[in-house]
Length: 415
Ligand SMILES: [Zn+2]
Image (cartoon, rainbow, N blue to C red):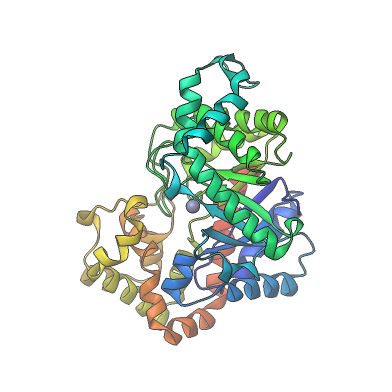
């Protein structure tokens, strides 16, 4: 299976918005832009919500059938490891192998030696098309990168082979992700990690590095935009070089995790992928759930009450809800409104605090992050929440489609 040049990871916590999500990609197609939809969900999300990957598969198949989508589409087993991949195998054709936990684990000395031996020709000055300065690579540097990353890549190899055995190697797409780690990978590290991926014979079509700066869930990028742009451009150049040099799949491209809402870096990303004629996989941070809340609030009545209740409860359980997401959110408690104040809001006021429109005076970055992790509260409401999703389906759908198309696809691919 070959992944198209542009693909969009549409995570959907409650598996209810497949159709309006796909509608955004249909709008893109009407503009002549082919983007492959990829419905992604992780073990963690399934566990918190009480869904399985069969639900995600059904959501994708149903949306595609209902809207008559004839292009390719995929279902992503997001951030899986050997311990949980089996529950995904039947339902997925895209696997995000998460080996971040293995980065930094000391590699076998002989493995490091033979890796260095195999890549000796890169020692010294190396120039890569698209990177201004010549890279200076030392033997120690290669050894140190190998020492830090070989175990992780070997682990990815193990997961890949396990899936290939069960599904057949041609029946799925492989992503290697290293984003959930502390340190960003430098372009030189990327180069040798890709070399290791090739040696391990993993036909990765996307790779998700950890980039410099903060990729908090559902909100804008925090960091030095120029630094990010330089690193991103070098990564794109390294990927192109690695494809040629190591014989990795020709369509190998970068994957940006928690890529939704990073509005301030969309323009540099768009410019760089255009300049290199590179592909891109962008994974959203499950923010469709926030559009559900916006739709409920705008719907008024019991929809609005439910949205307010989710907020009040999220605030009282903040530590618990933020726990699993500690490294990818930054909430300033002082900026969170009091539930009594929120109670006085009408639907439009609630929606404008939550909707990611930085030009709006009511937009509240902290409230948005808190509600992002509050999907557990809605999951616990069970049928009451699901019934509300059905009751306010139209207004929710409008917001889901508009968010993906106007705020994401347009600035990234159509400007
Ligand atoms: Zn990720």
